[in-house]
Amino acid sequence: MTGLLSLSNVSVSYGKVEAVRGVSLNLDRGQIVTVIGPNGAGKTTLLAAIMGLLPAVGSIRYDNLDLARLSTEERVAHGMSLVPEKRELFAEMTVADNLILGAYTRWSKRGDVQNDLGVVYSRFGRLAERQQQLAGTLSGGERQMLALGRAFMAKPRLLLLDEPSLGLAPLIVREVFRIIVGLRDLGVSILLVEQNARAALETADYGYVLETGEIVHSGPAADLIHDPRVVASYLGGASD
Image (cartoon, rainbow, N blue to C red; front, side, top):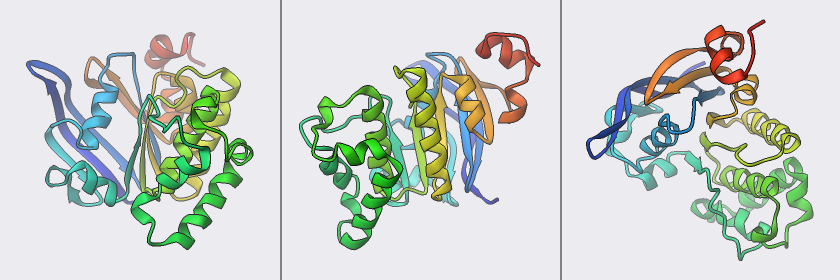
């Protein structure tokens, strides 16, 4: 594997409050990397800094580019896409129109867009059934699927996911994580921020634990899921 995203000693502050301190993180092409941790640990802040929505100190490099020189729009143009926690769909527009809007930067290649629309409908069967339904009338799980599908329509190489399981029933959570693995199989590398540590570690290749703005543990996800410290704090039981 070759590196796609690299953070070195990254810090982010809100005024005098340092929300993220000295974070270093790496993601290789073809990987799912997760950042787990409690609410308020700085996970969403970290994603915002990677996308250029918040200023950061330290080095953030993507595909050998220094992101400090790129605006959020330029980062998107280089193949980065964020699915925020609130999903931010266009509630008064149909499922189909939301998906097509996800490809607005590629609309000159309409044939490719239509092909990708077919890929989304094949991967997200519920969206295929609800193409003409207004996004605001979808269930929580369907809205998350639409947010993921819309992000895929931008043809990202790196997809940043902020709490994709938030507020979803356990059966829907499992379906959403299966879809995330499927997106990786389509060639999308994924940085996954999650409070649902078990689901995240069962899905990811590598994991980082963020507490009060700092990385306190990291390693292969298969190891972290059995790490007694992680089990005690996030998985609710004794390690195997």
